[in-house]
Image (cartoon, rainbow, N blue to C red; front, side):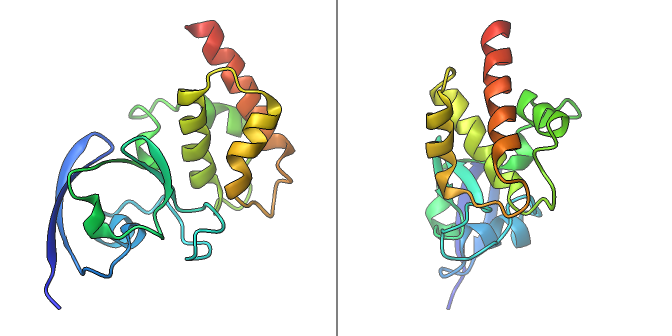
Length: 159
């Protein structure tokens, strides 16, 4: 099977790659582009560990083919920080100890950043609903929810 040439934007940078037509976006990000933040937790779109945004839409990268990235704008956990300066979400996750093993954290960070961009003043129920597709076996979610709510409040004050 011949490779497909793809031109896309990842974390604001224009990139090109060759991929097998059957290769997932997750595999392309990790194996071809060296962006290993997104994790494969399940491979079936059930855990959210591989969450990225594609044209500002939250997707499980294990369910999208790399070839489908043609012309799209993709954002991964690697693009959340501004160089060495952490995003407020990342700072709050550290402050609240809202991460442990790290498998789910990249997907949760991408998902919560997407939520706060669309809904800067979410209710706790909205945060819980938005994160329903992200499974975490270590934290029990309470620390994650508190970190997201506190980040939202801080970001509203700053704007």
